[in-house]
Length: 168
Image (cartoon, rainbow, N blue to C red):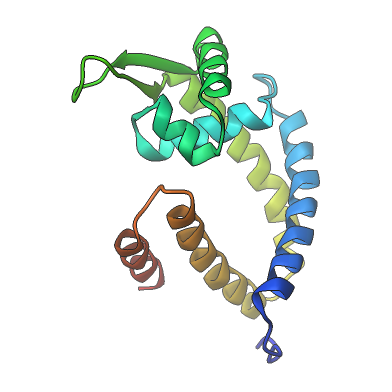
């Protein structure tokens, strides 16, 4: 059973999360190097992840989710399309808008990268007790739901439902 943790404020937890994030970047970098299809830049990876999560998204919504300027998003989408990682299609709701969706190649690239990263993370998790793994999993599920709401991928109600489903 994990030891009882002292109460922490948001700033302390944010500091720990930042430190863990830096270690994850090292692990992910190791996994990134092992991907046969070639590396994706961090901005490309973030964009593909948002597009995948939304299934289809327009450039304005992608820019809002990434916190980027329209001109940067436009160039990023041009590069992703040229690499065959996304497809642009006419919006079903407005002929003036273009929707973005992952191509088969984009979905395969994300899957390949995730598999490689998971191998690295699983190697670290092997060093943790089952009780600590359960505590970590619960905290990460809550963090994932809150982050999705924060960046606009889900509403509070969606996150509550997803969290309930994950813990059931």
